[in-house]
Amino acid sequence: MINKTVKDADEAIRDITSNSVLMLGGFGLSGIPENCITALLKKDISELTCISNNAGVDDFGIGLMLKKRMVKKMISSYVGENAEFERQLLSGELEVELIPQGTLAERVRAGGAGIPAFFTPAGVGTEVADGKEIREFDGKLYLMERCLKADFSIIKAWKGDTAGNLIFKGTARNFNPMMAAAGKITIAEVEELVPAGELDPNTIHTPGIYVQRIFQGKDYEKRIEQKTVRK
Amino acid sequence: MLNKDQIAQRIAKEVKNGQYINLGIGIPTLVANYIPDELEVVLQSENGLLGIGPFPTEENVDADLINAGKQTITMVKGSSLFSSAESFGMIRGGHVHLTILGAMEVSENGDIANWKIPGKMVKGMGGAMDLVASAKNIIVAMQHCSRDGKSKLLKECSLPITGIKCVNKIVSDLAVLEVLPEGGFKLLERAPGVSVEEIKKKTEGRLVIEGEIPEMSFGS
Image 1 (tube, each protein chain N blue to C red):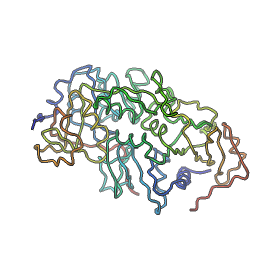
Image 2 (cartoon, helix red, strand yellow):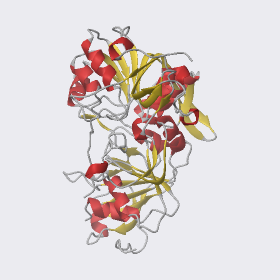
Image 3 (tube, one colour):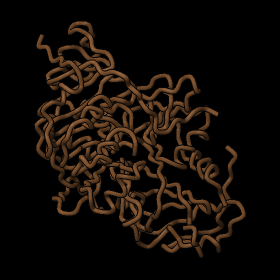
Image 4 (cartoon, one colour):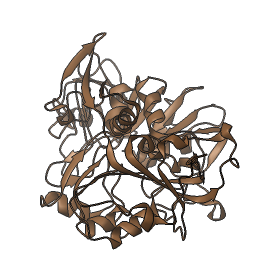
């Protein structure tokens, strides 16, 4: 089996340069590639385009990359919970494309699956539809959305093997599987890396064909945005 | 006038046995607290879960298990997990029976605005546009008026639209209203102690009143 293992986050992201288009997995702070974000912060790069559902919080996740002014453009669906983001957006320092969450998920899925564009009802009649082709199918209006691809997809899984096969846990799956397929180079960090053959093929969520580099992550903080407990 | 919990409690009466339901952030999340135990329903979280359970105990908090509002949750028996692409596939595909969400404004033809205040609040639409464009049955939980007394049930929305002609029913702090297919808010129920006159005064869009309007009841 092809061995995709690299030593650590620094080696995995070694060739990411300024002006790259990155996809970063996660929803909120759940399932974000913590180790790779830490490694990116050490690099002297900027003008990145980041495709990610959210933009982290001020002091964690992509929020740290924004603070360091590494990001030229964000493509996201929801960016609340981040004051620095809102400041950069309202002042025009940061270019932002806000798109419906389901459209984002499908544009990424389409990018990895060889579908250049598709029609969705989400956003018809709203400013999201501005400049997009509208078509009627069976009496209902839809707008055309293009697929998304990335130079590097950076994702996080629960378990992985040396062949790049991945298993996610809970709702930390979110955007990670689609992003795996939509990156020219996909980097997966995992909480538990095992030799190929140790994961049951029946339980694999993302097949290793989509993953070019995988490494055993460390020191996961797994910060919780809204800790809510039973009264 | 209803408080937030009472709005949620009234909306819970709209829930039917066997439904798959998506609850938005805010008041809609509270609806889960009032769904009668004898109803078998499944709550969807659009990040990728069917079968949202109660909030966890302190010991059971899991960073890998959150709802669409990023709150920590648990799963009920029979839950399933999937990607966000699959999740919105089931939303767009019409498999979710009922969507309950908040709104800043609703127009008399059923347009909803709930994602942006230009120049002030730009947090993004999240999954709201996908939900309102696809759901078959949309109930909105909202305040009837803004803090300075302006109606939020309008002829036309003034804020950027989230979706067009999609709202079926509204439960506000003052009333329950149905959005008619031909346009207009049909008054169905009044909140306890609220007069039809007051609702008339606080509804800018076309209000349709037929016969006696009953007061809401909260009993089952």
